[in-house]
Amino acid sequence: MKLLALIAALLINSRLPPGGWRSARGFFRYSAWLQPRLMRLRAWDHGLGVALVLLPPLLPVAILQWSLGGALFGGVGLVLSVAALCFAFGGGEPLEAEVAAFTAAWRRGDTAAAASALKALAGGRDEPMAFEAMPEAAAGHLMLRARTRLFAPVFWFVLLGPVGAFGYRLAVLARAFGDCQDNAGPGYCGRATRLVAGLDWLPDRLMALTLALAGHFSAAWTVWESEAAAGAPRRLAETGMAALGVPLANAPRDLTADAVDDAYALLRRTVYVWLALVAAGVLLIIG
Image (cartoon, rainbow, N blue to C red; front, side, top):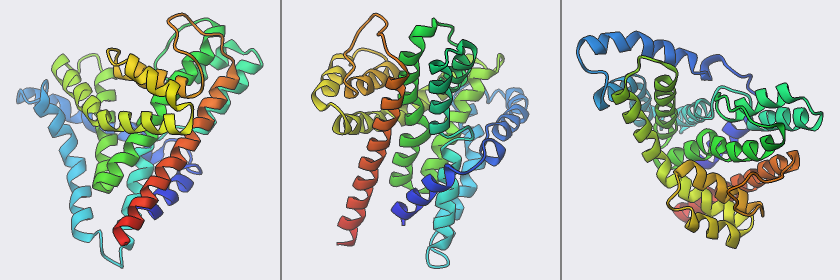
């Protein structure tokens, strides 16, 4: 059932319009409504605030999964799984569209459009840089965006079912709310950031391994080992670049939009590896 839900969610998500029920706006409005009420109770600017933001929307999904997931011969669980995965994959444009927007703008020399597309790949963060440096940044951001919008949700779905994928996206949105609110408070922001970092720990390692399997294994493994002291985002991004055959470098590398296309192709192969692993697990359970 999980394999079927994954395949269905990947196909459906690629055809859904951006925004709507999958966007962050609803969660941000809810969090903005809840924040002053929790602040009056001194229950906001620490881990309890993060927990109280996450639990109300998460509990109904958990109750529905564990009470009705097997109803209608598993049909309720399948629908819930597909909906949770589509929500967890994010409310923006599909990764393929974001990559296409960047590569098209860069190839025609449109600096403003390329910068806008790079901002989307960076999750909305502005990063002013030279036009020639944009493809390297785009390829690195693509690796991290794929982790957050695809691989980590799939990992938590396989492990915990719909509540895992749904809960991961809620944690990401809770962190994003702290990032975009000047008055969110350092305690709330720090706890939300650490929560997402903890949830990313295992998916990062599995994604790095499968990137290596789908690309240049020895180069990717060497970079993963050598970048152990670096931050998790840089370590994963550089491992993905090494899997493409791009050597580790401290100076900007002379890359083109072809590197971004190659990074997306590598990620597609990595998705196939993950699906094959899920299928193998299903066969082992059945057998």
